Amino acid sequence: MSVVLNETVVSQVQEAVDEARLLDTAVALVGIPSPTRSAGEVADKLASVLRADGFDVERPVAGFEASPAVVARFDTGRAGRVLQFNGHLDTVHLPFVPPRVENGVMYGSGVSDMKGGIAAAVEAIRVLRDGDFLPAGGVMLTAHDLHEVPWGDGSQVNSLIADGYVGDAVLLPEYHCHNCPVVGRGQAMFQVRVTRDGEACHEVLGGIDQPSVISAGAKLIERFATLDAELEKLVHPLAGRESLFVGQVHSGEMFNQSPTQLMLEGTRRWLPGNTIEAVRGQFEEMLSAVATETGTRIDADFRVSRDAYEIAEGGALVRSFQAAFSGTTGAELPVGAKPFVDDGNAFVAAGGVPAITHGPGALGAHTVNEECPVAELVRVAAVYALTAIAFCANVGD
Image (cartoon, rainbow, N blue to C red; front, side, top):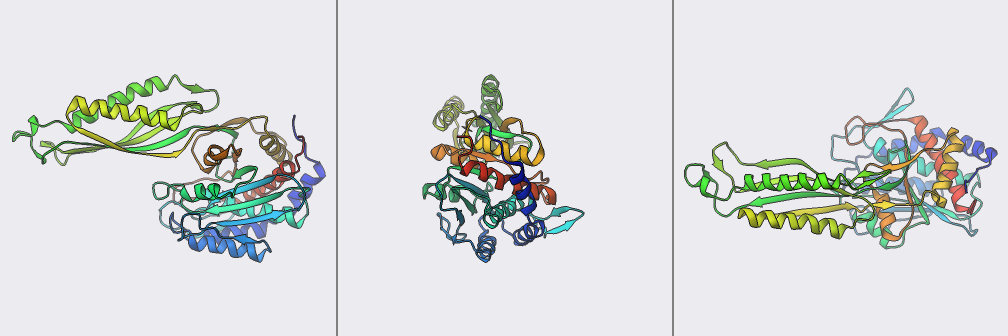
């Protein structure tokens, strides 16, 4: 059953979004450098902005005292669902670019990923409260550190979830906006170390008689390629296929020296229905077999980023979001997959809480050239507010 939002309400919400206020918030957040593990100052700033707006703010430590998380709520006091807006305040470790706005576009570190989206979510809560648009239920905003890898491990949002800071559904304003993602692959990053006993030595002074870590690495890469060919057959109609990808290989100091170590790095991605335990077990079995065959030692750091997930296309969150999107743009988004992993995977995996990643049409994430059209921030604020209106009041259920 589709959800239809009242055209008058849609128009009123769009008019209520205060572009100048939204931009002030975005500039304030982007203006504070916050590389992963150092988002304490920007979290303090967000908390002060929300308090100045009259919201009650909590600062749960959530396992990382250097940068307590930020939690703000708006509750109507009437029975209904709670929609959560969740975002990360940390940015990748690149040179800081201060915020500026030129010709309708905002630039600066984190504006794309994802301080601009957080500012839009803050504006959505303001609109809902100040305009008394939310007929029931409530909205909760959560913001945190430790998102960006390899510097962060996602543990702070995991702690928030474990501590009960979870709504009935979640929107995440990452820079994904071309479809309504209802499925996403799981991902692990791996670093494999192949080693042998002894010291590095010249090829003709015993090196050729040592177990070859390079040959062992080559054999392992060949096994990985064989497995990846098999994984190519495991396909989801929206999310694509499972994969095992090797992106880096390092070994040796010069052409005629027998090295004692080889390192290779890559990713393993899997579909809903597979499990972290099965994926990890399969991977470790390959390492063990090659180590035995080559007389080397092989161990690995197999770091799981997030598990695979899937939410119901006909669920209340998807229908409410589609109503909000079509109300503001005139057309629904096609359902699809999320190409990357983010904190939405964690919410679904932790307790089956449906999550949709949708943010501004921004560019330059993970570069020094982040940019986002101001109009996109305004659009996201309206979509988030309208999604809450439909979802929290159980419209269509």
